[in-house]
Image 1 (cartoon, one colour):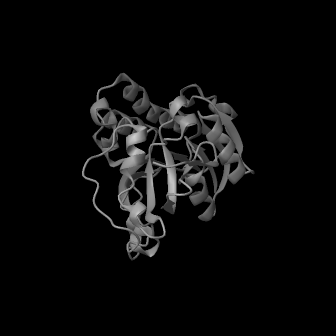
Image 2 (image 1 turned 180 degrees about the vertical axis):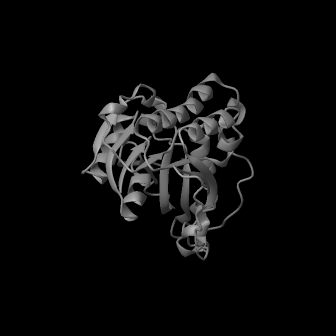
Image 3 (image 1 turned 120 degrees about the vertical axis):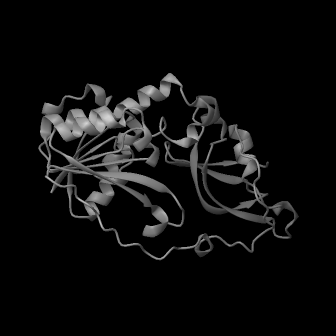
Length: 272
């Protein structure tokens, strides 16, 4: 099956489709850095960097399945006090690009990924009716990544759209949960819970160090495994306030590693 990937990011959805036997022939994202990373991971696909509200669908290759991950920030509970911000209205509207692409190409299937709150979007009934008007039957599935081998509870919505008389329901086999202790040494350092969420980049970075590691004879502290704000000065100054951190140990004499996903580089920040 040939697939296209809208809002493709770094290519996670495309990778899953490839593992399932699909051939990803086209991918799009509005962020050039993400497009470049996707191209590295999936060199056989065509790419475009643009706002998909303005996509020229006639230039998109024919395909059997449409994959899409429209912006979730406007739906997610993580938006906090920003609820009602016009910026999130624009973010939520990206879902209409899926309807536009499906209207032109009419692929047999589409899979749309988002947060579960997408189903509570005020325009979701209209969005659903638009997809149904194109001949698609929709079946929403809320999937917890912990049920599928990931060491984290993270619920995501997958809407399976099929041009059929009846919805296509997936029977996903659940796997045994893998504990975080499989890759984090909880015996290292002294742990205590984080009771207050950090709201700024420097505070978020400081808040992660829940172990009093400086008192350890070897200077080794708590392993980290989280996604949080990026506090390295180039990204703080540029307004990029997030980064992914792998499991690692904080060492007082070397500083903590900050892996800046969008830069694909590793930086070290001295001291705390």
